[in-house]
Image (cartoon, rainbow, N blue to C red; front, top):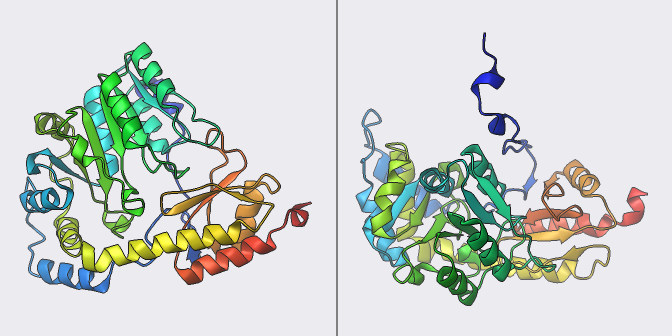
Amino acid sequence: MRTLDDLIKPSVRRLRPYTLTPYRVPVKLNQNENPFGAPPAIIEETLRRTAGRDWARYPDFVPANLQATLARFAGWAPDGIIIGNGSNEIIQALLTILVAPGTAVVLSEPTFTVYRLMVEVLGGTVVNVPPRPDFSYDIPGMIDAAQRTQSVALILCSPNNPTGVTVSELELRTVLQNFDGFVVVDEAYHEFCEQNFVPLLAEFPRLVVLRTFSKAMAMAGLRIGYGLVAPDIAGDINKAKLPYNVNFFSLTAAQVAVEMYATELRPLVEQIVRERTRVAAALAELTWFRLLPSQANFHLLHTPHIAPSHLFEQLLAQGILIRDVSRYPLLKDYVRFNLGTPEENNALLTALQAARPEQFG
């Protein structure tokens, strides 16, 4: 009788899965979500449009209406827009058509851990180029590693999760001009820094830009994202996606959110950015912590005098949930938290002001 070890690839059995304990707390600041939730106007319009929808019927095989709306919204060709069950699915589909045993993908860790997980599940090799001491990307080092290993792709998250740093347009151009593989820019948090690399797509057909409705769009529970790619490669990426991958309710909600973004969602994004500045200013006064600059909706906090696990538990006991990222590469003494509502941020600030090193021995 064969065992699981005989059937499942050893490389997969060795991997640590991406998982998160579902704590239920009053102040939840651990998943970079929009703390204000979806605006009532978007919810009501989505419910109105889906009220008569027959649940027994599949959604459209090609979500052409949403593609057309996103094309106008993002400024790209409809046939170069791929709709995914979260942007993670598009990452997975792209890597599926690129990665095989013996192929390499360049990353700069710490970054979103799912990139490495997907590459290694597919049998590929991750080439990690650590960032500079300030966590900015080592662009020359990444280009050199990609060229040397003949990598099929180089992935940049901008703003990067969990560090909050960005790649500049000049840096991205340098990568695109000196590397002949795919360059993936994950713009999951781009609304919080108003960064936009879509105009480069027409110039560089191997650029892939990923976006999501989970963060600024306040729809993490509906699982929808999109990729912007050269139309010539969209068909190949779609081959690696499951058919009918996004349900009709999420497709409709995304359509409404894009239509109402300027009036309903942009003001919330602007408020989160203001809170980012306010919280950073308040934490700058706490000498036992060091807050890293961020262009996203979250902050990375250096806690050299308090073990991240201790700080996590103390805040959890007060009903405040943050993310202990101390297992990430280079982040042994760090935690991450996203910006909440003003009231939630005040609760966090009060708790951090009280969390002095002497409390932990």
